[in-house]
Structures are given as structure tokens and as C-alpha cells.
Image 1 (cartoon, rainbow, N blue to C red):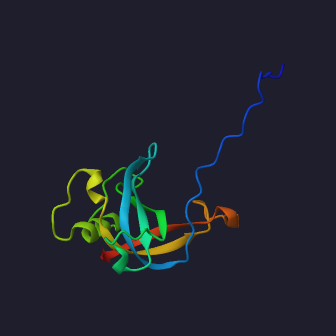
Image 2: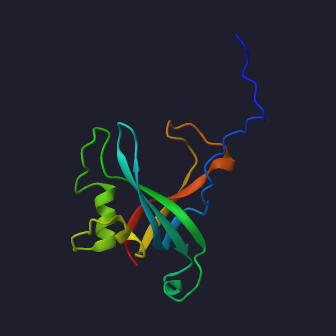
Image 3: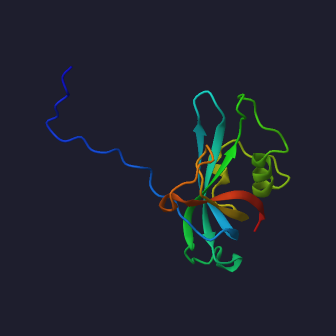
Length: 147
């Protein structure tokens, strides 16, 4: 068996860009991005990026957010591929963003909404194993209400 020879030395694949890490707690935020993430043969999620502000007074004043791009992950289907129901975290997010209105179907409609969020630290991987402290990040665990 012969080894593969390269003209150039192969490069190590890069890790995903490091996500922000902030102190856990309740923050005022504005939704800044949204995307649908599909897992092969598993659940689908909406990933919403939140910009965190020091206070509600900073919203709409031109003050830059204290932290940009804190992700929130919300399942829209379960592991069996079925849509999640009214009691799901995703349903609570829609309620916080749109109140009693029927949510629009366009994903971009969630961008620009002012909300209060609960932020937690992710210090374990999906299998429950501890992450190296350098790979910890913050995520929005819950969207609590409109700001």
C-alpha cells in the first residue's frame, strides 16, 4: 500500500467560528438573523441570532449591542420528523415574537424583533460530555417576552 503524496501539505480543517460567551442571565435582545437548519434524517431547527443590549433603553437609539450573534436553537420538528406542537419552545418563541397574530411564513419576518431572553452557557457537547473551557459559548435558551 502506498501513501498519497501531496504537492502542498494538506491543511487542517477549520473549526466553526467561535460563538460569543457572556454571563448567563436575562437580557434585552433584538433578533438579527434566522436560518433553517436541517439534520439528515432527524429534526429540523430554526437558528435565530440575537444581539444583546445593556438595557431596553438602548433599543432603537443607535447604541450598538453589547454582544452580537448569540444563537438560539429551536426545534421545528422532533426526531421522528413530526412538527412540534403548541407546547414546544418554538411555539413559545413565535408567541413572544408575534403575540396573537398569525406568524408570517417567511423566515425573515423574525428579524428585527425586540425581546427579553434567557441566556445560558453551553459547557457540554450533545452527548453530555464536558467541553474544553475554550470552546464554551452562550446560547438563548428561552425567549421570555416582547421587550
